[in-house]
Figure 1 (cartoon, rainbow, N blue to C red):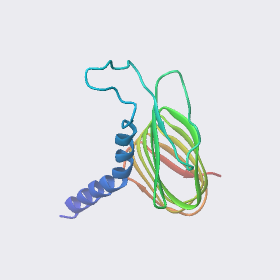
Figure 2 (cartoon, helix red, strand yellow):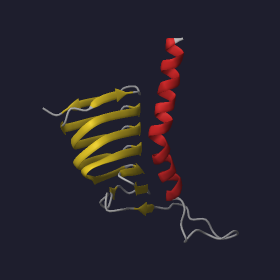
Figure 3 (cartoon, rainbow, N blue to C red):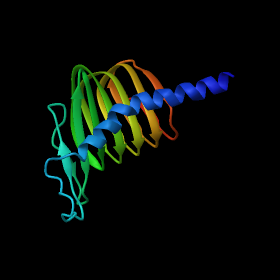
Figure 4 (cartoon, rainbow, N blue to C red):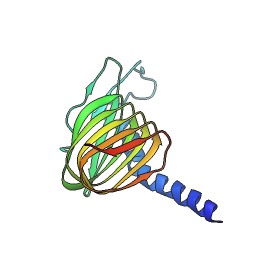
Length: 161
């Protein structure tokens, strides 16, 4: 009974933590420049939607899709294969979804939720909680004393020395 409750709770936590980020990625494909029916389809595309919470991403030669949407006091960031700097300012929360990103997060995040694989994220400060879902993420925070929830596999979450 206890095991079933823990699994169910972890599943709900994962769904709640990733929902805003998944919505962000879904919105990244929405554009007023979309091809009309019967039009030609591009072979590769890059969509970038940013707010004041994200700097322009630096990417390699492959196309990348990046979306950053601020809802209330939460920054929702989704990307694949991006290197960039994000700003939590003073006390915003951050949700990150995607894979193979290298992110530097400045300011003080109230909470941080990370989902995906092979992300390397360095935070200046996280105050309350870090939740990591997914595989092989490396999360480092320089300051703060957050509660850490490692709900994935192969993740490394540590305070910088």
